[in-house]
Image 1 (cartoon, rainbow, N blue to C red):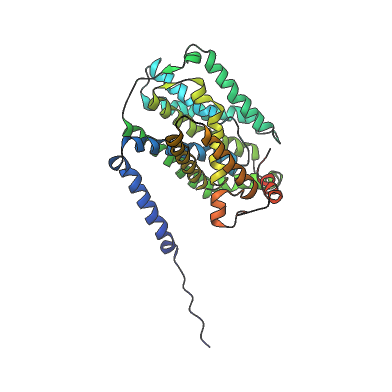
Image 2 (cartoon, rainbow, N blue to C red; image 1 turned 135 degrees about the vertical axis):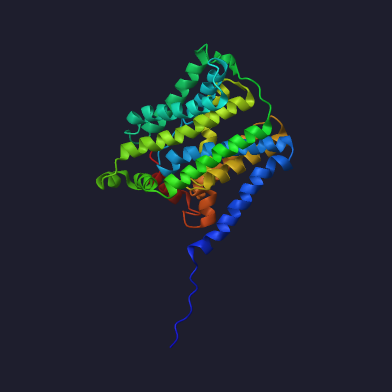
Length: 334
């Protein structure tokens, strides 16, 4: 009796298609400014910016299960710190970015120390209140320009902002892959999300891990906020600290797939591309918000795993509303 031959695929062979796809994608992104018009360079920069912001929120909201409704505050903080550093203190742009990221992470750690001990919806409420407080402070301070906003030195170089946004957003995804997908730190976050009490019982310092995750998730919005401010050269409290910043991060992650690696990138690409396409058709109309809102309702009600979950077919692909509600309750602490 002969044993049927079984084909064994080596890890290097199975990873070859992913590496090839990644190399092609990287090449396309690097060559993009040389092949498209200025308009599409701007659109691509916006997509990359939001992809980085959405993945940053996904670290605390998706991997840890704690909904932050004030995450846009770190983006606005980075914008103002870079702006004040360049216009008032005379810092070079890279120094402003570095200080913005570090300050956003330090502030997140300080806020997270008391609030991440809270259960239920209190963390979400506390982060929303923090974001609103920061917006009010920016509105009354003289150094921020108050409600009139502030101007940064103009630097009209679209490829420069494209590449620096590409580099920062790539760093967000590489960090997420190494720290959350392939390290004990990521496994601890998943344990907290699935059953925090059980994680504590097996010796996980849940508060410390959550604070580190919250600080990490705030660092990148701080840097991206600084890039955004220098890119637009004009910021005001509503443009960088408005609630819509956090709302869009959440929407993109929900649509793409909460707690997944590729979900935020997919969600950012779809939301930004659809909103810009509709803007081209309807101008300044905000009808696209209605369409995006309807899409989110469908995702929440029937496919809580988002588009990535639907494609993989194993993370609650399509559920009835009651089953979808149970899916959310098991993974989100509110």
